Image (cartoon, rainbow, N blue to C red; front, side, top):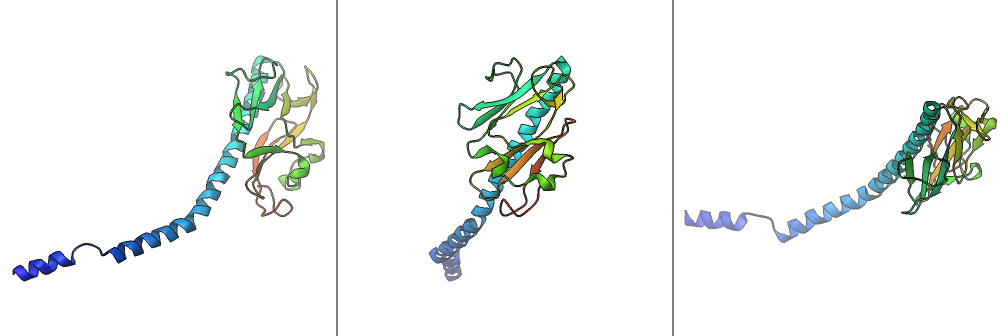
Length: 200
């Protein structure tokens, strides 16, 4: 009886070799999963930034209709780095702390049309009449909530497409389109490169 107890005590637990093997397997699995997780985090950040940018444009349009006046959505340097896009309710050119705003992280930048995928797969009506891409935001909404150019009352309607690029990826593009009627949509690029793929 005493011998059986001793044998059981000697056989319980894991050996050092077994623990090392388990740790090695866990490290290999973590190394495989890390790039996928890193890509997913960057993709989420880009999508969230595009959605937040669209929200700021929607707020600008809403405020223009509500107050029956023209408002501009503009951009300025963000204190934490990157770019801040905001509804300029008092036309000061600076964010006043109460205006709807989004901070675009420094790893994501506004891009021109030349540095972004073509908008030909966006199915925009009269896409040639749109302002495509800008590195600093300047979009107006008149008192009827229509995107426009010029000073108040700003009656010349215009469509816009703003491009965002994640600088850490060659195919990391998103966009926000605003039709001349004021409809907005976020877009994401499916291609592996700037020239092959489509917006969805």
